[in-house]
Image 1 (cartoon, rainbow, N blue to C red):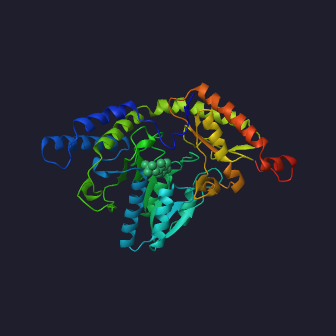
Image 2 (image 1 turned 90 degrees about the vertical axis):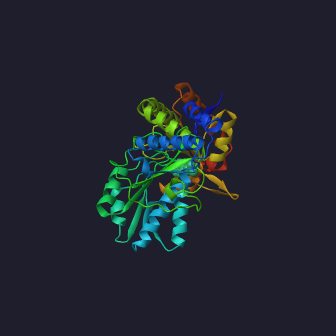
Image 3 (image 1 turned 120 degrees about the horizontal axis):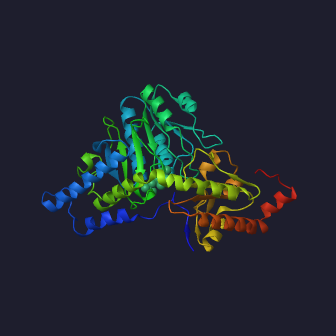
Length: 395
Ligand SMILES: *Cc1c(COP(=O)(O)O)cnc(C)c1O
């Protein structure tokens, strides 16, 4: 048995994406910049994909730039807005404490280059408050960047209201919508979005391809020097198979969106209810305003890594907030941002269900997480201290 419950990390490619890609690799392998018909057919496929991608988010094709994925789109969005800001003498940027590292690390780099960054709190429920954005706005603010939905705890942000506020104040608004695009209806007009990042492998497309939406008039800075591809905004021969696969995956995702949500919501809530039965556990992030497949829990007295390894032995692919970097175990910045203390943040588990998940799989996950948590607590000194009352329970 293998249950893949890590769809926020990546997804399996859809048959539609694969079927769309194979002809681009086998027969229509031309370079879109070539003038003969083989190249021009690749160019047509590329532009058709651009139209299809644009339509899904209510954009026009010229507003879509293809990138190598979500990270590149995030980097380019921030760098472009920063360059525009600098030209206008505005060097203040507002974002949040629980963004993806593609955002946080780019902001850190921009700080070194002279920009000032305000990272807003996301509160206990994992949601940014519009009032906080408003209070942080300054005369020299050039950009607000708030993710549409968080990749760890799945919380959905009040993007439309933040966008409206930015529009009123004449500040560019970017949203990292990498996790939202697979699950939510996005309309860049209604949502007041100026810049938006997305990534194909999060919605059953291929890895290494994504797109950046930039509203007409928002000038992008190219991160890569070279040819004039992507209207001079992204040099390098286009990843035609990847882009075509992405557009096929996105179209299918958009067509099935409501049906997938209707299937996922009861499964998600069943999983949450089941895991809540584990003593001294807590759901991370708002229970309602979260993505339909996302479940994220903290369990006291255990290490997320051990939990993952034992779940893997039982055929369950899941993820934990903590990442082992250079030997030191850093707890998730997202869990810290919602106020979890280090010890508790270490014992986290993220399960992100795919559209094809079943009730039987959810029940299998619940049963096995219960067993593994009890087993690990059985020889955890931290748990012994908690149970003997030597240290107080937090959850
Ligand atoms: C996965 C992810 C990214 C990075 O996308 P890549 O295509 O893997 O570079 C950025 N932001 C969020 C919220 C993500 O979940």
